[in-house]
Amino acid sequence: MSELRGALIGCGFFAVNQMFGWRDVKGAGIVAICDRDPERLKIVGDQFGIERRYSDAAQMFADGGFDFVDIATTVQSHRPLVEMAAAHKIPAICQKPFAPTLADAKAMVKACRDAGVPLMVHENFRWQTPIQAVRKALDAGAIGTPFWGRFSFRSGFDVFAPQPYLAEGSRFIIEDLGIHTLDIARFILGDVSSLTARTKRVNPAIKGEDVATILLDHERGATSIVDVSYATKLGIEPFPETLIELDGTEGTIRLSQGYKLEITNAKGTEIVDASPALLSWASRPWHNIQESVYAIQQHWADRLAAGEETSTSGDDNLKTFALVEAAYESAASGKPVEIGVLLA
Image (cartoon, rainbow, N blue to C red; front, top):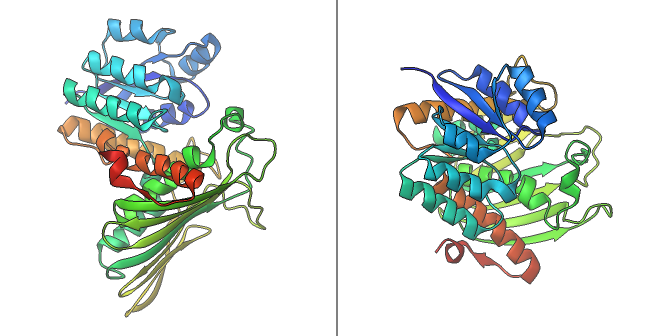
């Protein structure tokens, strides 16, 4: 089978990681790029040897010659670009957050469904090596049936230096980081029936919240806590690690700082190094995220070639996006929110 040809829209801060990932993916590669900023277009085009360069997405779609599109732009442009892809019958990957609103996200999923083309959200955190290791241990029955969990990302890392726009929005940590952590909670413990959230803004220089604590009721009976913070100063900075605690009927799983995975059950305690690979183009401490970018893109290429649905399809990501909307609603009202009502 010939290699799948892709086009990338958006050549900003994070897209360079995606371009490196596509360079390593087997069975797919990027043949065209698009960005409204001519300088970024030139930098990325020259760095990765891409000759087809566009400043207008509509013109790129009109010219065609690619099998899928990777949309790595900011959230406001996602819906028109996904709908443009659907209109041209082009399978699409969309960067997170999926859409400005849940209504937009539903419309994007419907557009691709009606067009009969695959849609995947670039929700790469569940593809991190340590997260996959936790899921593998759980699936193997290492701790029986899980009944409690905690998914924690607490850091004092300055995320605003490389992405200053993050300080400008009225929504910050749940929409930008919590969406990943909520998706991990769904991936590990299953879908959520209701949640309660509390938020706080500690950093006076930003507009949105930088701390959030969310209590989740999972449909399978487990209860979990998702807690995220960019206002937590620790002796050893854990960025960008997600730490996990799981209690089950037959034991416990602990994913702690330094990618240490500890599994305790009737057989005793096993300690596993769940460190991600340091890819040739990656750099610490970002390598955990960078490896997951490659992993999700390889997953897309494999599933697209096989005609199978992806793990983080548009339909699946609606359930994560609904948790983000519910968290903001709960934080504003002080009350629990039923997820089914939002997805109806």
